[in-house]
Length: 282
Ligand code: NDP
Image 1: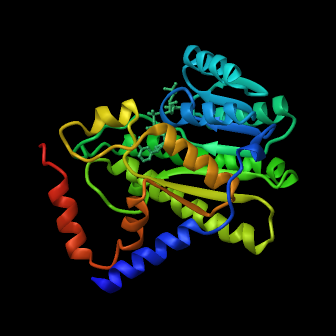
Image 2: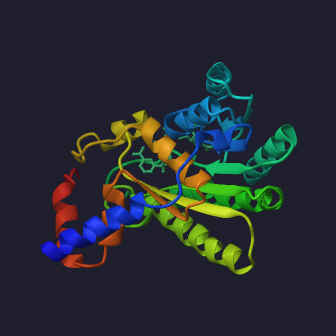
């Protein structure tokens, strides 16, 4: 127990050390945020706006995006524009990056955050849905990153990928979603190595989130699991901070780091705990 405690303390100290974040550093930065009509994406847009960035936001619902843009301008964004797009369409993914690059005259950050809607509960065997969700949650991320890379190379830019503990640990009730998040972690984690090897100046930050109190998430988990949900505005702030500090990985809330770190230490105990946590609803 003493050794375990010391290890945890050392890990916390390691996490607390390192460079400090200055909101000022984001003033005037050119940022593209996806999935920004609601939830964490909307909060990302408001933080960037408050910090004086120039932002392009995207999602499917134009009327909601319009409202978010209005609020971003009120909060102090140097520029705020929206472009409606459906990430199930690869042409849309490409078009959004081209729009942002053109309107902002370059790009410093792209924050890939959107997710397609997916049912929560026992998997129903719908393979077509898995393919569709892969397109929205994974292929569009790859498409946008590839399209944005040349612009990001010019500006020491950054790609921020919003992932989940469900991209690190196998959990029940969100199989297609989990598959897309594992794919993101695999692709962007490997891309980090290749960018480093070719001495690219583009950074990639992969963010591992636990349960966050967005409307969609709260609605989905109702009756399946009881656990505290952490605030979306704080999750968004931590994502922005990690991206600005060019960290390879970010974890929010705190338990996602320990869950990822100790994941494979005691696998049978881990699985027992997971199965106790989730309520079976046939
Ligand atoms: P929300 O469901 O609140 O928001 C999803 C966003 O994606 C919306 O802006 C939605 O807007 C947009 N979107 C949905 N479908 C499409 C589509 N086909 N094309 C383009 N945009 C689309 O999600 P959260 O804020 O809860 O999650 C944000 C990120 O955080 C995700 O990557 C998620 O995996 C991650 N995360 C969230 C957790 C949580 O508990 N909330 C936990 C772990 C990770 P519109 O409908 O207008 O298109």
